[in-house]
Amino acid sequence: MTTPVQDLSFFDDIKAYVGFTDADAAALAGFEPLVAPHYERIADHFYECILAHPKAHAAIRGGEAQVNRLKRTLVDWMRTGLLGPHDERYYHRRTRIGRVHVQIDLPQQYMLTAMDVFRIDLRQVVEETYAGEAEGRRRLNDAVDRLLDMELAIMLQTYKEDSEDRLRRKERLATIGQLAAGIGHDLRNPLGVIESSLYLLRRRDHDEKVSRHLEKISAQVKICGEIITDLMEMARNRPPKRSRVDVGALIADVVASVPVPPDVTVLQVVDECVEIDADPGLLRQALANLVSNAALALESSGGRIRVSGEALEREVVLTVADDGPGFDPATLSQAFEPLVTGREQGVGLGLALVQSIARRHGGSAEAENRMDGPGAVIRIRLPRTEADEAGAEEEV
Ligand code: HEM
Image (tube, rainbow, N blue to C red):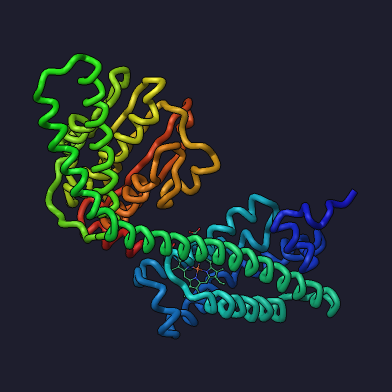
């Protein structure tokens, strides 16, 4: 029984459209040993064309080291493309390419034109090496065309998806910026009045119930203050003011200052003498957001939060893990999107700000659910020094 057209996956649909068959896959696999001796030459030619064109060249920011690395990636791309199998796993590996091209701001037209560089070079190899009859040669050329069309379709599709995501994110951030500028500032004043009245009220004697409610108001006012701070920080998007930060001391300071429910324990695990060139205020804010999120996740169940700092060769990894319910799979992929939240009462700024702070330091933030049980893990990866940041860019 054939699958109805509307139920085909994106990849199967493309395969069906270009008419890629098992016979094409077999022809390409048979062709691969003939192309293998030419891989390096084709990869060299591919990057010669890019480097000769100033606007395409601009996407390569890491110099010769990056080009050499990309050539190896490209040889692997050619080999795995010709050999297959052209299954869902193959498709998922290919989806990365368009996404990476969005990250490096590669204009779309260069992917289209670059594919023709391969097409021409592969056709030439067919001409030079194929010893069979004309009909077999034509079939092989057709199979190459179909493969390259599928590659292009996947690349352009994921490129489009990620570009749209990026645009949506930009628009959201712009909206947040306007919101922050408009109301964040205005809210500070009434909150300040509430805080000072609370201060006066708490100095008087009250019965236990009133005192408890005053504490609750105070805690909520503090949360409002934090949301405003996040909003303003998000809107300002200021570059980090770096100094030498002792990661152990920073974590201890954050853990001491963020309130957690009584049945939540916080474990601190830091490699000895980990230091980083970073903005202490921004890092503190990012970590405090993460610990506070973890504490909220454990509010009703209690549990453990683990805050760790680990030094790798060129980066420092800060991790906050909890054993709460973890991310809902539907929101995990959007964990860092501003205004997206898994909590009923959340605004969805905390993690967006964490990512923005990591990126401003030349680093990144990752979110996942724990493998060894329920719980969420957020990791911030930061270059240890500004020089490491430049090195990391070179490698990208
Ligand atoms: C149609 C042709 C192209 C193919 C098949 C291709 C293939 C690839 C592959 C396989 C990757 C690695 C993705 C990963 O990390 O998994 C990549 C990344 C990259 N590509 Fe392309 N690419 C193409 C066009 C271009 C063009 C035209 C440029 C530049 C003008 C370019 C620049 C880059 C850069 C800078 C990276 C990124 C980062 C790194 O160093 O890993 N690509 N590409």
